[in-house]
Length: 214
Ligand code: PRT
Ligand code: MG
Image 1 (cartoon, rainbow, N blue to C red):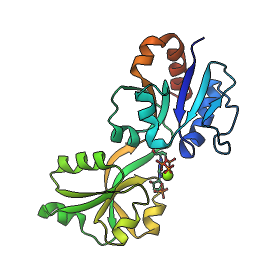
Image 2 (image 1 turned 90 degrees about the horizontal axis):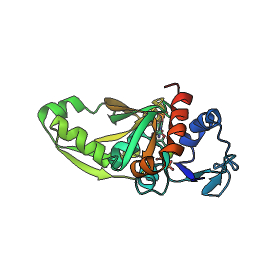
Image 3 (image 1 turned 135 degrees about the horizontal axis):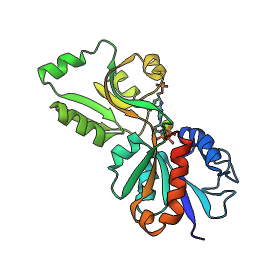
Image 4 (image 1 turned 180 degrees about the vertical axis):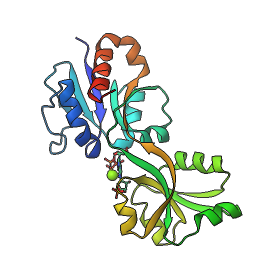
């Protein structure tokens, strides 16, 4: 029996994937939220979960560190998606990738004037692509988290970040001014593994698609 591994991250992605795993008939032997184990066995002897940082999921799957993975469209767009198939939109962990500024900052005027914009984000590739397509020149400031702080302390004019309820923006006096893309999590597959292990992987991909209501 060939063994199959699924890469996923703790927190939001695991929380929202858990019901899908249950519907697919996969029961993890440990809870990744409380266990320190990074490789988690399941009720299926041929299948294990590998626990990675959210931004690392595409990299693990691309290089065969896992056959399958569950990753947000944000993380996939930033990675670029090389070596990956993205066969199923799981329709979980939904949010939107937005441009946000301090309340009162006239974003439209800056864009109209063709002035430079200082943009802070951890999504540097997405931000570069978005503003290049609009013809807006930017100075990009790469951060690793808490982007919402940057405009408040004068580090940047704008941020590119995920927004779900909008509470974090509101609590920090920021407003979303532009949507870059809707985001949800996808099942991803190593392209080579799909060729060599199709008999094992395809039924699982189909089961996830069905569990996600596709
Ligand atoms: O937290 P850690 O540093 O370990 O990694 P991570 O932040 O990359 O992972 P995690 O678990 O926070 O997010 C994993 C995935 O969940 C992301 O890649 C998205 O695809 C998805 N997701 C869905 C979100 C959100 N919704 C979301 N709201 N990820 C992050 N957020 C953050 C957002 O960045 C902002 O700081 O929540 C805050 C805004 O939330 P609201 O509700 O106040 O608008
Ligand atoms: Mg986080």
